[in-house]
Length: 177
Ligand code: GDP
Ligand code: MG
Image 1 (cartoon, rainbow, N blue to C red):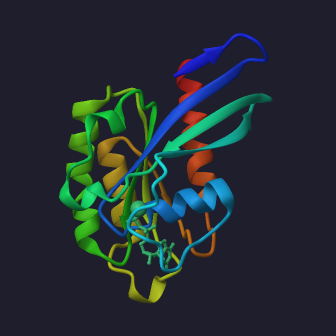
Image 2: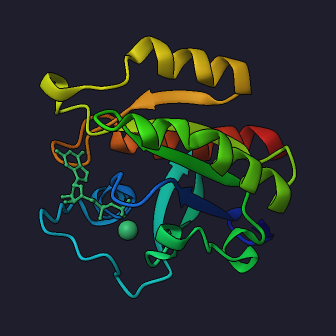
Protein backbone atom coordinates (compact mmCIF):
# COMPACT_ATOMS: atom_id res chain seq x y z
CA UNK A 1 0.00 0.00 0.00
CA UNK A 2 1.34 3.37 -0.99
CA UNK A 3 0.35 6.90 -0.35
CA UNK A 4 1.86 9.56 -2.55
CA UNK A 5 2.01 13.06 -1.16
CA UNK A 6 1.05 15.10 -4.21
CA UNK A 7 -2.61 14.95 -5.15
CA UNK A 8 -3.29 12.25 -2.53
CA UNK A 9 -2.90 9.23 -4.73
CA UNK A 10 -3.33 5.72 -3.41
CA UNK A 11 -2.22 2.37 -4.78
CA UNK A 12 -4.05 -0.70 -3.50
CA UNK A 13 -2.97 -4.21 -4.40
CA UNK A 14 -5.95 -6.56 -4.62
CA UNK A 15 -5.67 -10.29 -5.30
CA UNK A 16 -8.30 -12.46 -6.93
CA UNK A 17 -8.28 -16.08 -5.73
CA UNK A 18 -10.46 -19.15 -6.05
CA UNK A 19 -10.58 -22.45 -7.92
CA UNK A 20 -9.87 -22.81 -11.60
CA UNK A 21 -12.60 -21.64 -14.03
CA UNK A 22 -14.76 -19.81 -11.48
CA UNK A 23 -14.40 -16.66 -13.60
CA UNK A 24 -11.53 -14.79 -11.93
CA UNK A 25 -9.92 -13.60 -15.16
CA UNK A 26 -13.26 -12.56 -16.63
CA UNK A 27 -14.21 -10.60 -13.50
CA UNK A 28 -10.96 -8.72 -13.86
CA UNK A 29 -11.33 -8.07 -17.59
CA UNK A 30 -14.92 -6.93 -17.01
CA UNK A 31 -13.78 -4.54 -14.30
CA UNK A 32 -10.65 -3.23 -16.00
CA UNK A 33 -11.73 -3.19 -19.67
CA UNK A 34 -15.46 -4.00 -19.68
CA UNK A 35 -14.71 -7.12 -21.69
CA UNK A 36 -15.80 -10.74 -21.44
CA UNK A 37 -14.07 -13.65 -23.13
CA UNK A 38 -16.33 -16.64 -23.72
CA UNK A 39 -13.44 -18.98 -24.55
CA UNK A 40 -11.03 -17.45 -22.11
CA UNK A 41 -7.62 -19.02 -22.17
CA UNK A 42 -6.31 -20.53 -18.97
CA UNK A 43 -3.45 -18.04 -18.97
CA UNK A 44 -3.49 -14.38 -19.82
CA UNK A 45 0.18 -13.56 -19.39
CA UNK A 46 -0.51 -10.34 -17.48
CA UNK A 47 0.21 -10.28 -13.76
CA UNK A 48 -2.12 -7.46 -12.87
CA UNK A 49 -4.25 -4.71 -14.31
CA UNK A 50 -4.63 -1.25 -12.94
CA UNK A 51 -7.89 0.63 -12.77
CA UNK A 52 -8.33 4.11 -11.37
CA UNK A 53 -11.39 4.82 -9.26
CA UNK A 54 -12.51 7.81 -7.23
CA UNK A 55 -13.17 7.41 -3.51
CA UNK A 56 -14.31 10.49 -1.58
CA UNK A 57 -12.93 12.62 -4.39
CA UNK A 58 -9.52 10.96 -4.09
CA UNK A 59 -7.86 9.05 -6.86
CA UNK A 60 -7.26 5.42 -6.02
CA UNK A 61 -5.31 3.08 -8.27
CA UNK A 62 -6.54 -0.48 -7.86
CA UNK A 63 -3.80 -2.87 -8.93
CA UNK A 64 -5.72 -6.12 -9.33
CA UNK A 65 -3.71 -9.32 -9.59
CA UNK A 66 -4.84 -12.38 -11.50
CA UNK A 67 -3.32 -15.83 -11.34
CA UNK A 68 -1.85 -17.32 -14.50
CA UNK A 69 -3.62 -20.62 -13.93
CA UNK A 70 -1.35 -21.86 -11.15
CA UNK A 71 -4.40 -22.31 -8.87
CA UNK A 72 -5.05 -25.48 -10.85
CA UNK A 73 -2.02 -26.97 -9.09
CA UNK A 74 -2.67 -25.16 -5.80
CA UNK A 75 0.63 -23.44 -6.42
CA UNK A 76 -0.13 -19.76 -5.95
CA UNK A 77 3.11 -18.31 -4.64
CA UNK A 78 3.70 -15.98 -1.72
CA UNK A 79 4.84 -13.31 -4.21
CA UNK A 80 1.29 -13.23 -5.48
CA UNK A 81 -0.04 -12.31 -2.03
CA UNK A 82 2.80 -10.00 -1.00
CA UNK A 83 1.59 -6.51 -0.14
CA UNK A 84 -2.08 -7.26 -0.83
CA UNK A 85 -4.56 -5.08 1.05
CA UNK A 86 -7.69 -6.54 -0.50
CA UNK A 87 -8.87 -9.93 -1.76
CA UNK A 88 -11.75 -11.31 -3.78
CA UNK A 89 -12.46 -14.94 -2.92
CA UNK A 90 -14.39 -16.26 -5.90
CA UNK A 91 -16.52 -19.38 -6.35
CA UNK A 92 -18.87 -20.51 -9.10
CA UNK A 93 -22.52 -20.66 -7.92
CA UNK A 94 -23.10 -23.60 -10.31
CA UNK A 95 -20.31 -25.76 -8.86
CA UNK A 96 -20.47 -26.58 -5.15
CA UNK A 97 -16.89 -27.90 -4.92
CA UNK A 98 -15.64 -24.40 -5.75
CA UNK A 99 -17.67 -23.08 -2.79
CA UNK A 100 -16.32 -25.81 -0.52
CA UNK A 101 -12.79 -24.69 -1.49
CA UNK A 102 -13.30 -21.19 -0.13
CA UNK A 103 -12.18 -22.20 3.36
CA UNK A 104 -8.89 -23.47 1.94
CA UNK A 105 -8.41 -20.24 0.02
CA UNK A 106 -9.10 -18.30 3.20
CA UNK A 107 -6.51 -20.35 5.07
CA UNK A 108 -3.98 -19.66 2.35
CA UNK A 109 -4.80 -15.96 2.38
CA UNK A 110 -4.41 -15.91 6.17
CA UNK A 111 -1.00 -17.55 6.04
CA UNK A 112 0.29 -14.90 3.62
CA UNK A 113 -1.51 -11.72 4.62
CA UNK A 114 -2.54 -10.17 7.89
CA UNK A 115 -6.14 -10.02 9.03
CA UNK A 116 -6.66 -6.38 8.06
CA UNK A 117 -6.90 -7.37 4.38
CA UNK A 118 -10.36 -6.41 3.09
CA UNK A 119 -12.09 -9.61 1.99
CA UNK A 120 -15.02 -10.08 -0.34
CA UNK A 121 -16.67 -13.43 -0.95
CA UNK A 122 -17.86 -13.45 -4.57
CA UNK A 123 -20.38 -15.94 -5.95
CA UNK A 124 -19.84 -15.58 -9.69
CA UNK A 125 -21.98 -16.71 -12.68
CA UNK A 126 -25.27 -15.54 -11.14
CA UNK A 127 -26.60 -15.35 -14.71
CA UNK A 128 -26.81 -19.16 -14.57
CA UNK A 129 -29.72 -19.21 -12.10
CA UNK A 130 -31.26 -22.31 -13.68
CA UNK A 131 -28.26 -24.48 -12.84
CA UNK A 132 -27.46 -22.87 -9.48
CA UNK A 133 -25.81 -25.28 -7.01
CA UNK A 134 -25.12 -22.91 -4.08
CA UNK A 135 -27.92 -20.73 -2.64
CA UNK A 136 -27.55 -17.03 -1.90
CA UNK A 137 -28.28 -17.87 1.74
CA UNK A 138 -25.33 -20.27 1.95
CA UNK A 139 -23.03 -17.62 0.53
CA UNK A 140 -24.31 -15.06 3.03
CA UNK A 141 -23.93 -17.47 5.94
CA UNK A 142 -20.35 -18.38 5.08
CA UNK A 143 -19.47 -14.70 4.68
CA UNK A 144 -21.00 -13.93 8.06
CA UNK A 145 -19.15 -16.80 9.77
CA UNK A 146 -15.82 -15.77 8.30
CA UNK A 147 -16.23 -12.00 8.52
CA UNK A 148 -16.27 -11.37 4.79
CA UNK A 149 -18.29 -9.04 2.63
CA UNK A 150 -20.51 -10.93 0.21
CA UNK A 151 -21.84 -10.35 -3.29
CA UNK A 152 -23.02 -12.37 -6.27
CA UNK A 153 -21.76 -11.32 -9.68
CA UNK A 154 -21.88 -12.14 -13.34
CA UNK A 155 -18.81 -11.36 -15.38
CA UNK A 156 -20.91 -12.37 -18.40
CA UNK A 157 -23.70 -9.79 -18.06
CA UNK A 158 -21.66 -7.44 -15.79
CA UNK A 159 -24.02 -7.70 -12.79
CA UNK A 160 -22.36 -6.30 -9.64
CA UNK A 161 -18.81 -6.60 -10.99
CA UNK A 162 -17.89 -2.96 -10.49
CA UNK A 163 -19.72 -2.96 -7.16
CA UNK A 164 -17.68 -5.94 -5.94
CA UNK A 165 -14.37 -4.23 -6.68
CA UNK A 166 -15.55 -0.80 -5.54
CA UNK A 167 -16.75 -2.17 -2.19
CA UNK A 168 -13.38 -3.80 -1.56
CA UNK A 169 -11.58 -0.60 -2.54
CA UNK A 170 -13.82 1.45 -0.24
CA UNK A 171 -13.23 -0.99 2.64
CA UNK A 172 -9.46 -0.72 2.18
CA UNK A 173 -9.75 3.05 2.02
CA UNK A 174 -11.78 3.11 5.23
CA UNK A 175 -9.14 0.90 6.90
CA UNK A 176 -6.42 3.45 6.31
CA UNK A 177 -8.20 6.78 6.60
P1 GDP B 1 -10.64 -18.43 -14.05
O1 GDP B 1 -9.96 -19.73 -14.33
O2 GDP B 1 -11.15 -18.39 -12.64
O3 GDP B 1 -9.80 -17.25 -14.40
O4 GDP B 1 -11.96 -18.38 -14.95
P2 GDP B 1 -12.18 -17.68 -16.38
O5 GDP B 1 -12.38 -16.21 -16.23
O6 GDP B 1 -11.14 -18.13 -17.31
O7 GDP B 1 -13.61 -18.30 -16.78
C1 GDP B 1 -13.79 -19.71 -16.86
C2 GDP B 1 -15.00 -20.01 -17.74
O8 GDP B 1 -16.20 -19.52 -17.15
C3 GDP B 1 -14.91 -19.36 -19.13
O9 GDP B 1 -15.46 -20.25 -20.07
C4 GDP B 1 -15.79 -18.14 -19.01
O10 GDP B 1 -16.35 -17.79 -20.23
C5 GDP B 1 -16.86 -18.61 -18.00
N1 GDP B 1 -17.39 -17.52 -17.16
C6 GDP B 1 -16.68 -16.63 -16.42
N2 GDP B 1 -17.50 -15.79 -15.76
C7 GDP B 1 -18.76 -16.14 -16.10
C8 GDP B 1 -20.06 -15.63 -15.73
O11 GDP B 1 -20.24 -14.68 -14.95
N3 GDP B 1 -21.15 -16.27 -16.28
C9 GDP B 1 -21.01 -17.32 -17.14
N4 GDP B 1 -22.12 -17.87 -17.63
N5 GDP B 1 -19.80 -17.81 -17.51
C10 GDP B 1 -18.70 -17.24 -16.99
MG1 MG C 1 -7.81 -17.17 -14.96
